[in-house]
Amino acid sequence: MQEGGCLCGRVRYRVMSEPSDIICCHCKFCQRATGSAYLVETLFPKDDLSVTEGEVRTYEHISEGSGKTIYVNFCENCGTKLFLTFERFPAIAGVYSGTFDNPDWFSRTSENTQYFFLSEATNGTVLPAGFEIFHEHYWESDGVASTPQLYKEHTVVTPEVKEESDSFAKKHQQANNK
Ligand SMILES: [Zn+2]
Ligand SMILES: [Zn+2]
Image 1 (cartoon, rainbow, N blue to C red):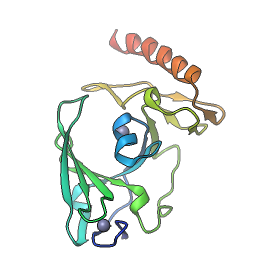
Image 2 (image 1 turned 90 degrees about the vertical axis):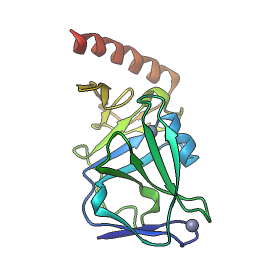
Image 3 (image 1 turned 180 degrees about the vertical axis):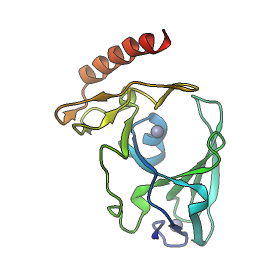
Image 4 (image 1 turned 30 degrees about the vertical axis):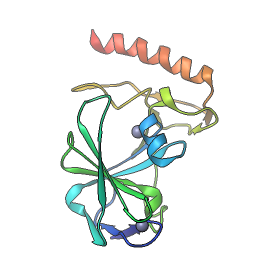
């Protein structure tokens, strides 16, 4: 069991399992929603996450990609965002992992951690060697998985790196659609 909470302390939550996946998401939504370069999102079965003190308010955001609603759950008093829930994936919750009391309690390995939306990543962020880096989402379209890149060395995001990723994605999109 692990606990977390918001800045002011009114809202507290706990999770009862290890994260099934960890997504380091560099998309514009996550940049805006964190005010930072990317979101470290830990995914849990929704039933394993519970709010133990206070209550969350929910902002409903329509995803540009899917047209489905993303629920951003936050503390009304201090504005800290705590977790996401999804119309599209109703059994899953995604925690804003910086809100864990100990944000290092889970390990981040190339087996459980993936990087999304290099296409929108800000210049100067670093992509670690050996991890799956997706140009956009894991899903290219419904039921079709995208092809990730694996860098041999830690790579700093630059306009050239994003262009190269764009060509890689286009090439593999054609291959996947054959
Ligand atoms: Zn708060
Ligand atoms: Zn994102």
